[in-house]
Image 1 (cartoon, rainbow, N blue to C red):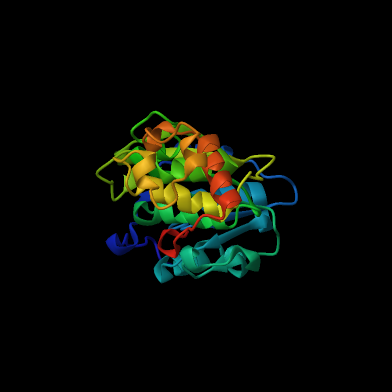
Image 2 (tube, rainbow, N blue to C red):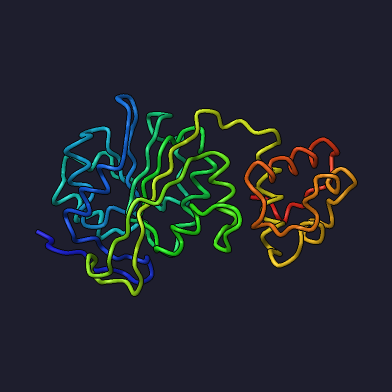
Length: 267
């Protein structure tokens, strides 16, 4: 029987080994009786074991590492029909047998932000996310306006989810230990995720603004700027000074004026 999985640098693998932390992460997840749980990158199953105890056959996992898939098959054979041996970034959540999904995982640092962009694409299905990130990334994602850490994902996740930083995890709780501390955050989808503008417009405006974050909004969004946007009073501000609602208002003006949005900024 395979005893260990070799951590692969190319996949950003750092296996959590501290059982109390694993239990704490699983306890942070809240799933209703009809929902499924999808674990991303289970590795050697430190979270998986606790998730199986709590959710049984409602647990699915997606794992790109064939060695980890083999390990799971040997240690959790009953799980194998629900193991998806694929890249989560290329997996369509509509393939799961439910449209009520909670996502959990010790996310590889190198794709953690991309995972959240995929969550945003499936925001109608995903009700909650509990994930481990590099600590600085975690803090940035849940930061609010007026903070230099505030950025694209802060706004976009904040438009549809309530985010909270739960706790920090030290380097020595992993094998191999990463060079930085980790942070666990939870996102809970808002009851109402409708926006005053098209979501695609919001995504593009936010990306345009933060791609030139040292510029004022008037200059960063120069291709879209008009009298209606000037009247908002946002022109002399930088993107990190605007709230989610402020960005939505800009998107609403862009939609109402049928202003051009360029595909190169598209989500």
